[in-house]
Amino acid sequence: MPHLLNVWPSASQYLRDAHRVLLLFDYDGTLTPIVDRPSLALLPSETKDLLLRLSRQEKFFVGVISGRSLKDVTAMVGIDGLIYAGNHGLEIRGPGMDFIHPEASRLEGSVSQVYSHLQRGLAHLPGVSVENKGLSLSVHYRLAPDGAAPEVEAAVAAAAGPLEESGQVKVTRGKKVVEVRPAVPWHKGKAISKLQATYSQASLPVFFGDDITDEDGFAAVQDSGGLAVFVGPERTPTRALYRVDSPREVAETLRLMEQL
Image (cartoon, rainbow, N blue to C red; front, side, top):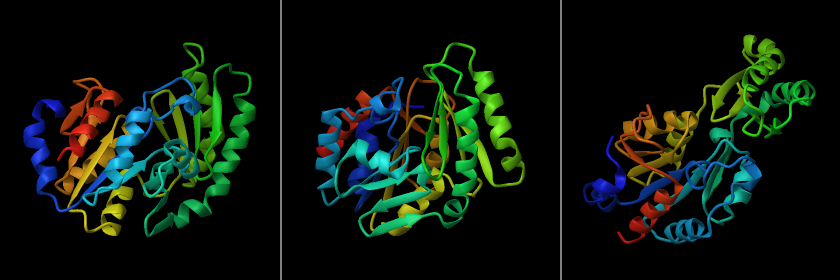
C-alpha cells in the first residue's frame, strides 16, 4: 500500500482532473490524534484553518463523518458550512441536507435502555465511561486498567444481548471502544453513497479514516473510483489503497490540496 505523500504527483492528478471533489474525513485518529478522553481530542488550529480554506474553494465539498453524535462532532470541528455526519452517518447535516435515518430514530429507545443498564453495570470499573450519543452509545475503556476488556465485553453482552438477538441493536468495536447502535443496514459507506447522491456535482469522492468503522467508507469510495486513505501504520489490514502515518500527515496532505 503506497504512502500517499510518496506518490502525490500521480495521486493528485485525480484531484486536478475532477470537476468537484467530495472530501471527507473521520475525526478521532484522522483529523486529530487519539487521546485518552474523547473530550480532549481537540482539532489542531492549523488543520481547522486548512479545512476552512478548502471549504471556501469552489472545487471542494468538505465533510466529517464520525462515530460521535452530530451535535458533538459539529461542536468539535466548529466550521460553518461543512457537511457533518454523526453516529456513523445515521444523522447528517450540510448545505441543503438534513437527514436522520428513520429506522434508527425509531430504535433510539432500545439504545437508551442499554445505556441505562451499562451505566449501572460498569459504574464500579475505574477508567470506563459510557457515552450516550442519542442514536447510539459508546463504552470507552482506554483509561481502564489492563485486563478490563473482558469485563466490559461481558457487561455489554448482558445489557445488549437480548436486544441484539431480537434484531433491535448491534454491537461493534473500535480502538478501545465498544459501540451499541440500532440494528439498521447502515454504515459510513452507505452514508458516503448518500452524500454522493446529494452532492452529485462532485465527480470524485475522497475519504480519510483510521479505524475498523471506516472500512465500509473506504470500499464505497473506491467502488466509485475515488481515493481512500488509511491513517496509521503500514501493514495494517485495510481496504484503502493509500495510507499516511498520522493526523499530522493528513494536515500536510490538506496543504498540498490547497495548492492544486
